[in-house]
Image (cartoon, rainbow, N blue to C red; front, side, top):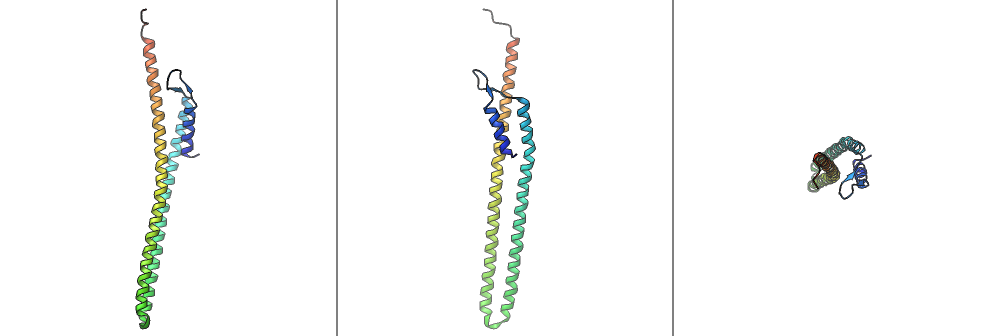
Length: 165
């Protein structure tokens, strides 16, 4: 189960909880809700590992692109040196090697941009999931805190003597 699914499950449970009369409060099964929050807590490391995995993949793709670009550049240097030795095609060789170098640099830059965009998209999605998780947890805690305060107020009223009347 994914973190988002668990959040949806918690929200659904809270939304379907029995309402308290004349109040915005509701009754939820504390142990069940806490159990679900614990499950969410267990899912968070998996999401973090997935993000780290994406970062490692990005690094691998960038490194692979860098190696490929270096190979293209090295091949271009070898080709240029071979062509330079031939006097008839020297000018063409210089122009072609320059074009190959520019093309290799352009391809490497394009690869880097694509990889960066891919990783940025994945990280942005992960950020959204984490923000939703944090919001749901904060809302849950706030509701629990509000209920605790209501219980304390009820205890204070029970301890007060009845009003004369």
